[in-house]
Image (cartoon, rainbow, N blue to C red; front, side):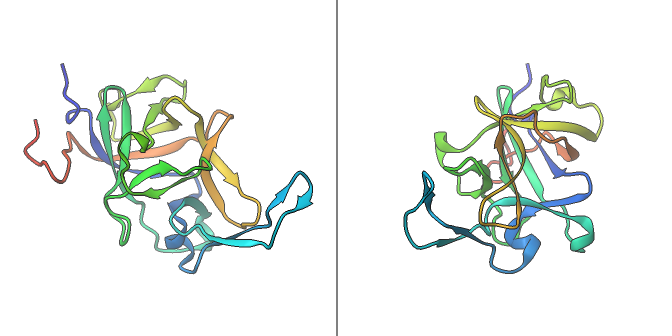
Length: 190
């Protein structure tokens, strides 16, 4: 029987023709979204600005140069994964998790409130590291007991975000860097 550490790994997660990164790193400027606060067709207050710089998004390769893919620690528990950022200037140690609106971002670990994910093959079958013989895999992400991860646009923002949606989700390229990876705080874990 394999342990959770033996099913855990470090990898990059990439999108075809786009950089996948924290929006603040992709745009290197404040990443602001304006919420006009409309409810039921009626204006309900002054527009508010939100800083979405910590949220996960994509940007076409041709618009930005020299963006390295993030190293992500895929920590396995049973057949699902928690995703920890390992190579970001300001978000190392944060989890990739859903906010209250269902948008993925770099959030501090929050115990049971941290989003966990199933990795799905392109046939929508749940897979773990033991099912990945090669170093490069095509996968989809599905928030555990929730929705598939896809690209969305939000009202009031010109950016492309990653969020849970009802569609089948976008395919990612997963490139494994290290198998049998431990927590940084427990390198002697079995």
